[in-house]
Figure 1 (cartoon, one colour):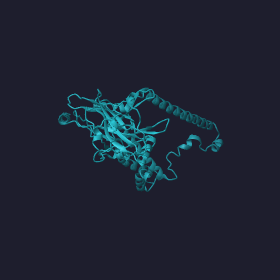
Figure 2: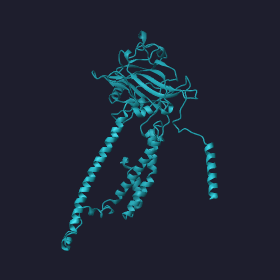
Figure 3: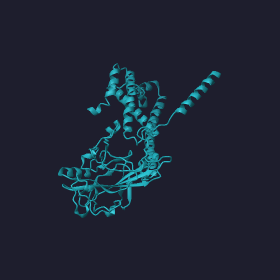
Figure 4: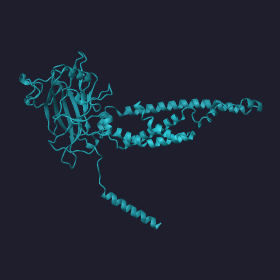
Length: 436
């Protein structure tokens, strides 16, 4: 007993020594970054997406402004690649705490093909997906009553179609709204909010100046459609930018900085709750409704089973009072007793296919369980884009051992002799379906 206590004491001392020398660390991809005033805050663009089609499109396939030196791909993991993400740099120049007022970005003259392509993407409702400090841009728009409303999922549209004339208009101006927070004990600032308010403005230069889109003079010339040292407001828009061939589209942007009390660790909360746009009671109503439906169907099935069992038991009890000759006539089993002979009977047709399906089902179920557990504890945060898909693939691959064991074990219980082939088919049948 004394020896056991001494061993436990040594183990406790060793554990405390290890804990004392340990250091905290950040999970890759979610470490906060402090920006000093005036420091460049890079903005990246992702693939264009639409709820009307499942095909993401490259951002720079449309006639948008390109960065100097051409677009450059950001490093992506396997999950980002498989989910259609294509993150690239952008020409927008944003600096910490530096306000920007109607800055000219570039001018694009639409060809007939570009105008048709742009109008088609607007028709299908494609949205821009911009990223700043790993934070996706929310969309700021107007409700039917004229109030501002922010949506935190799906990005913001690239244009709109007029309800009356059916003409296509492009959002060529954006108000970039950024929120920052000053953490205690840190000198820099952290980005905790990012939203974009798109606008369609038919820009014109003051004094009738015509820009060729290349000379540096066009970046400094004032625009007649923009007020000096004032952020663009929808009330000041006189005409929208129409999408048509040979149209000269001038892209501009504003940058607004606003202090926020939101901590960096909780900046994703508004994306998960849509800023409390959907009341919490709605989720409880949905959960309650699902539980009631399950209970109702379960009670329905139980009532049917009980009624059948009562009928069979009543028949068996009636046979107890019969004579021996009558029992011989009624000795054939009927009702639920017929089931006992079929429970462990192997399928007569394609037993290997049945075992493969059981093994693949166990693989998918265990993979889903591990993925949900890791998501619940925070290992698969939305801040790490593509991590959910990557984790799902890794868990699915690791759970293949269980699938092979379950299918081969079940096949051998059916007195099958080709359990090696069953294991091989389990590993290739379900994952190989997309190849056929």
